[in-house]
Image (cartoon, rainbow, N blue to C red; front, top):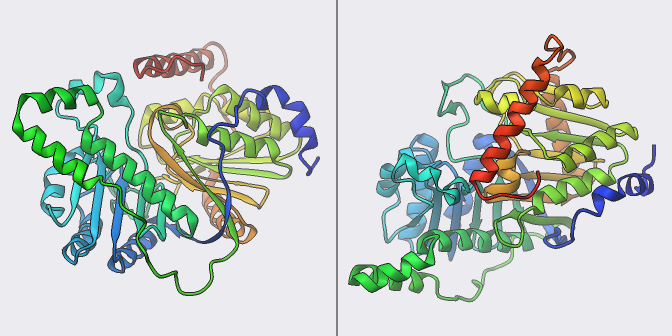
Length: 433
């Protein structure tokens, strides 16, 4: 086994050469980070930070549910708006479709400016290619000094929208970060809010402006909100920032289309001892699979923690058809059993860790808007590793993936690949996954 990265770089040169440097993570020091597990830890921290806001709050989320957890966040946002803080919220039009009417009651103007990313007015609108690209980020930024990034939607940990209430909270994580990244979080949430407020199609906006005075007034209001404002002059946080090195990585449909996938693969390529990966939806592309299998073949311990309690059957099937290939290369697979799994985190060699919204599947890696934080810090990695080991201890290891042999496994894998390819073509993705 090597720990200096020379052997992986040599044996995986064809894989590494496939990736351009555009959109590579930009690391900087001077951060203080805190790992938060589940909404039970995240929501009180967010409410406290929002209560202390003096200038602005930006929030972007896929699901903003109308339960007690959602109401507590809405109350904090509304209170901030009423004391003069600029509060901007953007939610996904599909993920929050069922609660949109309640959200408009909870987040009234002018206290809160609510915007909807790609509204879904009719079910057949989802057949449009652009509608398959959803806002999946979970971001909150306060005064550009505090940022929250992770995989946790605004919904109670014990509530699943498809399966109802459960006794145990789902496994999920977020990170609170103070330092330079917080401003990047704010700018990203602001960009998504802007896009949602103006509409995805600028041509339609221009046509509507020409047809009536009401759209003109709306456009003027939006442009007024989007006026360029200087960075708020705020006091620095109490106490010095720790020299934690971190990077904020987003996946969009402009210049950073494969930035998160690239960050994962490059970290795996450099792995010398261990790779621990947690995701509920696992169907990586060929380069990602090759990086994982070759890491295991050169002696790196590779562990995957996936769903044991299934929420979407097809998503589970997509992961299961890869089990034989992965286990035959020495990769360990565990299925989390105590509750639903929603975490999207990874650890490499005790020095590299990521927490965010991106799954390891075509939706997250090629279509949705996603955001992760990458932390290069031994102490943070140790804490996340302890949480990972505790989750693995409560999981079952996959030791038998036999499906009776013959043609059935081949047909199932081919069927999943065909479905994934068809879906990506519908969404306008023509490159090989």
